[in-house]
Amino acid sequence: MIYGKYREGHRVRLIDGLRALATYLEDRPELPVPHGANVAVSVLHGTDEEKKAEVERIACLIGSAPDPTAAGQGHHKVKVTFGPVEYSVTAITEAATARWDAVWSYRDAVSPDPPSGA
Image 1 (tube, rainbow, N blue to C red):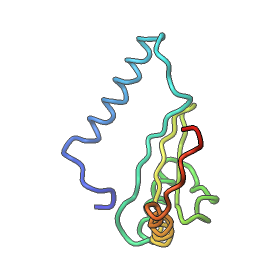
Image 2: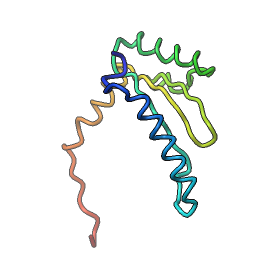
Image 3: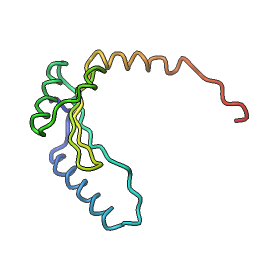
């Protein structure tokens, strides 16, 4: 399974939830809304080539091209937007994941001094 495990009916529940949220906000104009929203799907499993191929398959389905700037960072990403709402599919290469893990391996090694007067 390339995306991970979802319970039966997950897709229907997600779409129903998005519609319910839209109706809820539409019916309550006094509530603030964000500048935008992103429904993000991550391709979690497979080789780098399989994950890239999945992003390219999705690109064909939504009529968009993968983001060429993301590839330079070890990401394969495609998106479609509906005004300020974005649907995106991203796959991250093993090398990019390893770089991220290396950076974060230092997170407990540094303890900055608290600001003066804090």
